[in-house]
Structure formats: C-alpha cells, structure tokens
Image 1 (cartoon, one colour):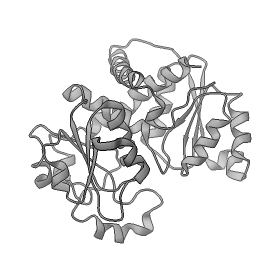
Image 2 (spheres, helix red, strand yellow):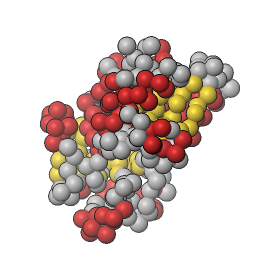
Image 3 (cartoon, rainbow, N blue to C red):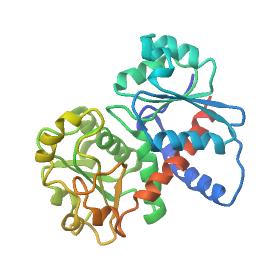
Image 4 (cartoon, rainbow, N blue to C red):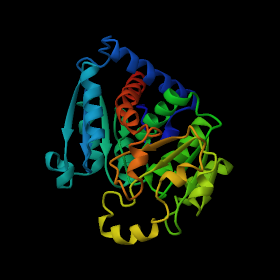
Length: 301
C-alpha cells in the first residue's frame, strides 16, 4: 500500500525529524555538486487546480536533480477538468507514473484521489492544509537556530491552511504555537483541540508574539478570497507584522512568510526585507525538503 503525504500527521515523528535532517544533507550535496540520481527514469505527475510559482518550480526542479521527470497537468490538460471521476483518474494515472502531487481546493478531493492511487500522493496545498511548506519552514528554522523543539512560534493572521499546518507541525516537532487571529477567522476547532495545550489562541498579536522565537504570517486574502479583500483589510488591520510587533519577540526572532507577500498589508516592508527575515532561505528550502519527501515516499513503496 502506497504511503501518502496529505498532512504532516501522515509521517511518524521520527520520520519527520529524519526528513528535515535529510533535506539539509541533500542541500549540502547539491551545493557540493554531488549527483544523486535517485529517481532516474521515474516520473512525477503534478496536478494543478490552483496556480503556483514555488510549488511547480520546486517539484519540477527536484525531479530533474534526481534524474527523473515531472509532468505538469492543469485542468485544461486532463479529463479531471472535464468531469472524469476522481477515482478513475487516480486509478489510471497511478498505473503510469511513480509519484503524484496535487494542488487543489477541497481536501476531500485529495483524500479520494489518494484512496484509489497505487503510488504515493503528495498534498501540494488544499484549502485545509499546506504541509510541504511546513517542511521547508522547519528546515529553515533548524538551519538558523538549531532544534525547533520546545521553542515558541507565533502565527499572526488568518486561521487558514497554513495555520492548520503549523498546528500539526507543533504536534510533530514539539514546539509551542501562539495564534493571533481576529474574531471570525479562527482555525478549525477540531484541528485546534487535537493539538491540546501546545497551541494557544488569542485576539492580541502582541500577546502571541511575546518572547517568541519566530513570527510567521500569510496574506490576508488567499486565492479564491479576492472578493473578501476589503472586509479582510478591516478585520486584519491590527494584525500586521511590523517593527513594534517584532519587538515583542526575542531579539533574535526569525520572520517567515510562505509568499507571495503583500508589503504594507500583512507585513511591513522593513520586516520582510530586514535582517530577521529568512523568507528567501525558506522559499529555497521548498526544493530541498520536497526532495527529501520524494525520496522518503518512493522508498516506502
């Protein structure tokens, strides 16, 4: 039976820790020019219902560096876009390729696809979770500050798919998570409750940021929420990550953002472009952490 990666909780805790270390190792190997054709003549199908820059480029590059091949499939390129049942597409594609990654809207769609797939399926983003980003974020923290276990992370903003994945990451990697969200934008109750007391929800961004080792945010309106932009600007106006908020955290606190960012909205320009920001390392690490993920999942077959 194929091992899938639909949320961070699909990994055992020891697997998650080992994956981060392997990502750091693969990054070092690449920079030293060490070839690792682990997926030579293997194929990754990439199904995109949502547009992407980092996800497409990182997965496609990962397969090239592994000696394999990636096939980009938009809704215009597949029968899925013309109403073919998900289970039928899963059965067919998984007989032709070695791995499948999907970036879509409904998480249930991804789960159904994985149920009928013979090969590993990777969640490259759904409305509920974005676990690949968290692998990159944890890798980046470890590279800059060492182990993330027992550290404090502050999530500022919407209780969205990134927030849900941070909650799962807190469970997997053993850090404390403070969430500051406006009323009406809380993360999913069940996901929060499953994490227990390692996660705390507040309406005060400065309370969440107090003595944090890292501060993270995301855009106020994600893909598909553009019509809510004006209302969200009002709701989130006090949730910008700026110098006064960063001053509440530890002096050496890191700033992360999954990108794309809107300077002047969820984050001030002097923060994302400043010395505490590690967003460019974070973006690059999508490549390395996903290589480690592809290796892990393929090895599990």
